[in-house]
Image (cartoon, rainbow, N blue to C red; front, side, top):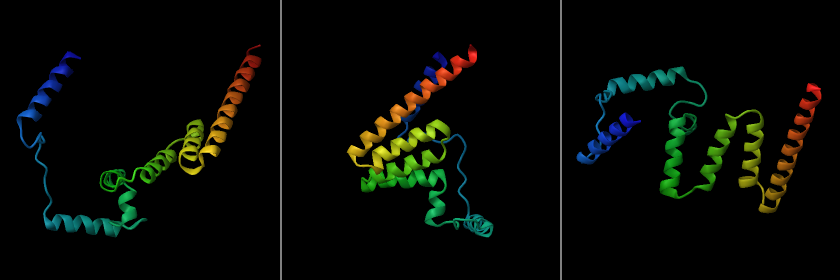
Length: 144
């Protein structure tokens, strides 16, 4: 931990001493126009859905989605809609009980009126408690 603290302090000092901020260790190679055209052509040949370089294609990549999200939050001050989209993207990657919990969270925070959200959260908590009780009871019965 001491070594980490020393490295962190050196990094902070390096940032503070340079006006432009930290520099990459290796130079970042900027492609030539020919290399860029070749890369775009290879992406267009590969095809696929969504079509390369269109809006849906950009948003289908994590970095593109992140940059678009950051832009909306910073420039348009639109948090609710993009937060909803981020939650749905997270929901797609969850499974099992966590997916059910995430579904309940999305429904109560974005889709339902406040009165309905309270009912859904209460019902979800009761269902979750009931399923835990039945699991415990079943486990105890097997052990006996």
